[in-house]
Length: 182
Ligand code: ADP
Image 1 (spheres, rainbow, N blue to C red):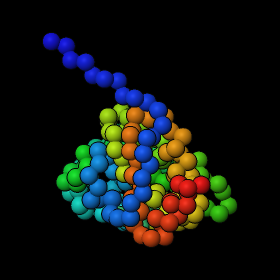
Image 2: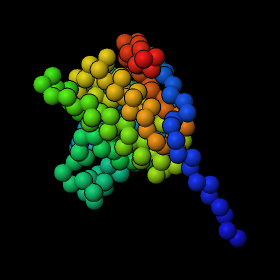
Image 3: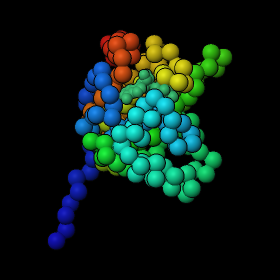
Image 4: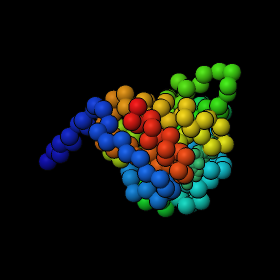
């Protein structure tokens, strides 16, 4: 007997939602990690995801480094691993740009979002949670990062039905709320 898989419906993301909270608690198909190029863990969201998700995530990150990215994951790119013990099924690791006043790196920040959605499509993920990539240790001002993130998701052609931005504090939530309204 043959089974037919329905092709994913590719188009604009139907729902872009905002939530103030912790991304590690999200019951979505995939959570996006604001990783660094080493894929070996770090602080902020990265630390929280590895802590709550357990060692299976780092194990797969190490394999990805060895097999595909010996020099590290380039800025603006994304790769997927298991989500380990998290409620989500997958973690999509992306490397945001470090903010620089002297250079516009917004295309790299946009690329984190479009490439993460492309990986989500390859996985068949329909719901994806993003943190505010680059706005922590990487220093991107929230009022600059939020419109770039929202616009990249809005203009993406993807099978993902819901993108949920999970903002850690009130300031981040407000910046994304303004960008979504704009
Ligand atoms: P980057 O290195 O890309 O700047 P960070 O992890 O330092 O990444 O910060 C990105 C954003 O994620 C910041 O706005 C930070 O407040 C937020 N953040 C930190 N921990 C969490 C968490 N558990 N869930 C959601 N957002 C978080």
